[in-house]
Length: 233
Image (tube, rainbow, N blue to C red; front, side):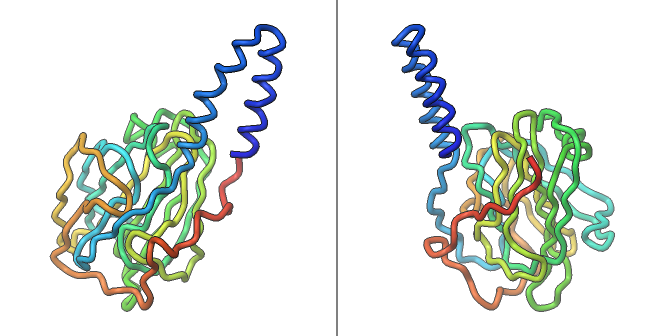
């Protein structure tokens, strides 16, 4: 935010030297920059047998997956969420869990609205969450860059316990987030394609089988803001 503000201030000065009123054109851009990095408080549902949205945005696709290697080859359902440059970009954990694995992959910057191609070919960061007690994989959260996005932040370390609704990262400037849930949890998807969802607050799926509660739940008001551990620019 500070770097962006400094660059815009320099642009305003240069433009103002040429034509004074042109300097005011940077004001809307500066406001948008500050709004982009907003991190609103969210009320996390108290129900244990649910998974919440890992991101703010529009549900772009819901697909059945015959076999997901990251979930031990289990059949699964994938919910894709498209984040425009106007959405909150903080990502949150969909459930209580232990971070089993984190995989960062370099790739392309295809428009995130091209769901399948973007999911397979774009730069991404994939986190596998396991049941806090049994350790069995219960969810995959995949952060995918888009046409404009150039940086992914994911803060938890492998082995760390996260709570449902807890902040786990951010994708900067337009992107896509996917949530993959194994079928053995008997998920009932309660969102529809085209629906707007809020990360950490809106329920995406109700589970027939429950994921165990983490040892310590992190309250949203006490959780630390997203820390700057990120992918290369």
